[in-house]
Amino acid sequence: MKKVKIATIGGGSSYTPELMEGFIKRYDELPIKEIWLVDVEEGKEKQEIVGAMAQRMWDASPYDVKIYTTLDREEALKNADFVTTQFRVGQLNARIKDERIPFSYGMLGQETNGAGGMFKAFRTVPVILSVVEDMKRLCPDAWLINFANPSGMVTEAVLRYGKWDKVIGLCNVPVMAKMGESKALGVPKEDLIYKFAGLNHFHWHKLADKNGQDITKKLIDTLYEEGSGLPKNIFDIPFYKEQLMQMNMIPCGYHRYYYREEEMLKHGLEEYENEGTRAQQVKQIEHELFELYKDPELDYKPKQLEERGGAYYSDAACETIASIYSNADTEIVVSTRNNGAVPDLPDDCAVEVTAYIGAQGARNVAFGPLPTAEKGWLQVMKAMELLTIEAAVTGDYGTALQAFTINPLIQSGDTAKRIMDELFIAHKNYLPQFAETIERLEKEKVTIKDPIANQLSKEG
Image (tube, rainbow, N blue to C red):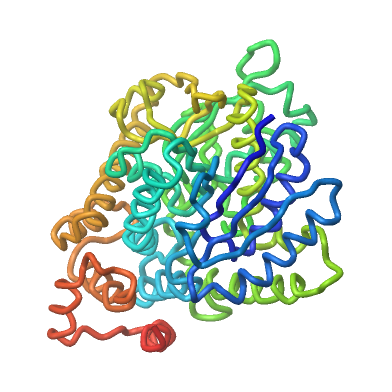
């Protein structure tokens, strides 16, 4: 079997130990020779810490795998078989600004939803497209496995603007849903048949038993007894049971921002005004994790990583890579080209669906048309995504404003425009495509209202 080279963009991430753990337990299916961890100068210290820990994890295993750390992306990509992406442009300080600036005006600040999620896309899309251009030169046969957020929009950008078909986007939310629901029902995951459809962080799913009988409503009843199994980063306000029964589907946890917007915004504002936004909390968790990672005796993934909010992202990536390598035809929920699986959206756009993963990538499971309300939501959200990606690529202010206007979590008008302008100023160093816009806003003396976001912006 051919030994595999893997390059990980964003190698200094706190999730890297989970990635190593996933590769170690699948070594018999995926014989890795070397893993290259790549980061930028800002992430160099973290990369060195996590790189040393990653090597300790492999040294404690029965396998001879070499970990390389570098700031030279081209060196890492050369002849890679798989490229995984888990980077965050601007580090966690950028996420803090994404959250605090909208909250300072009474609107939702969140990593992948609302104004913050759109600006994360503005920063991330140009970088992923530059990675794709490097891959075309240096590893043209490699698969790109993305779990950099916003994962669905990043995957869409790679397909639409990067013209790179060998890409699969991943998320931990479906993984956690399956784990939690299987436990709640007291049924092994292997005896349940799932069908997911929608967009990343905006999907629904149905469930059947091993005989093919739909048990979605039984699951809804059970979840209201057992709890929701949400990721750590989503406040647990319950959906209205009657609404779920009517649609006969389970929404993903992030739908709370849309179905219970009032309550989610209230909770977010309380955090903003008291203990700090989720990004500020995560920054503290991450600091504690890296203190653990420095321990020269630590050679396994610590339990505390699950508190980070993105548990099982990396494990899903390992499963996907192993499935492609061995043509295993494993059922995984992925972001990929629609190809008719969700008929309410164009065939050529990216969707998040159940698929079987093998050597040729994803073979989607057809879901069929969605109910009226969900179809409407889905089409609005995809339009918002497409406008956001177009703005990220072109640097056009009017397109960005159109995306802001159509986003359901942004109340359109002068306040929304003000939030957008402040976010442009806040992320000046990471938005070169918007340089003319930012220069104009600076001449207009746009300032950042939130003192913490303002200070972080001054620090770069």
